[in-house]
Image (cartoon, rainbow, N blue to C red; front, top):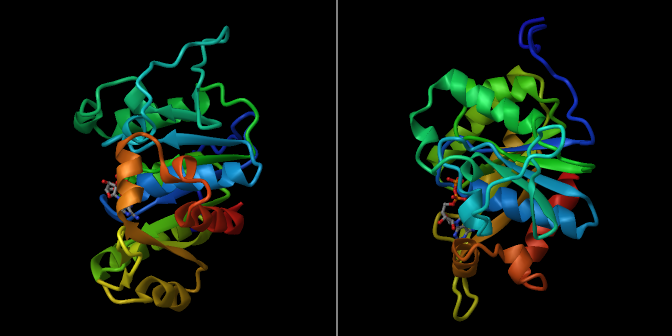
Length: 260
Ligand code: ADP
């Protein structure tokens, strides 16, 4: 039937990996990678064995977010061994090439790179593999969604209308390839003052929740725009790992309980 994955798509399971969750966004800069990493850590805190694949081939940010700057070793089967950090098994194209090299790659190269990172990596035994998708809803994203047996997709959006429209496009794309949308996360939902903790709804409040209800998909939670989420990311020590007892870690764990 129209919309179903084509018979050409290779939806083979990834050995040892029980479930794959895609973290997607309609456009860049909404905090997709930050959320993917902290969500992976939140799932780890729930006692799950978790991997993170940075498939954001056009701008792999996981090396910076995790402070990893080593190249993966090969095992006896010539598969890449993911880097272990924060209790996660982590793989990024950024471990293999300079951060801006992949920018100039064309579609087919991007796809074969992503496929290799899924299949030619010795992931070990994982309960969940979180895939940080490239931003947008183009061919690369569509092919990825078709090539991997996804449990579902989490869409990251900011409150502004534009990215909500983009989130809608993301929903349509996953629907087209029969991937369940696990829900929408509103990032940079409100500003939280690092000094006094006061909340300011700079972009208005409840946009994404309302939109999720309207679209009939779960609303997974709101993450504030907070200085420490950015500074911990920039320091390569994400907030869930560096402030495990803080309020932000609790938010990411709560989202984790909804998507696990
Ligand atoms: P994307 O993957 O969507 O391009 P990133 O995760 O790289 O976005 O985030 C873009 C920038 O916004 C980064 O500097 C990141 O530290 C910052 N950022 C993301 N989410 C938050 C947040 N909730 N609060 C503060 N800064 C954030």
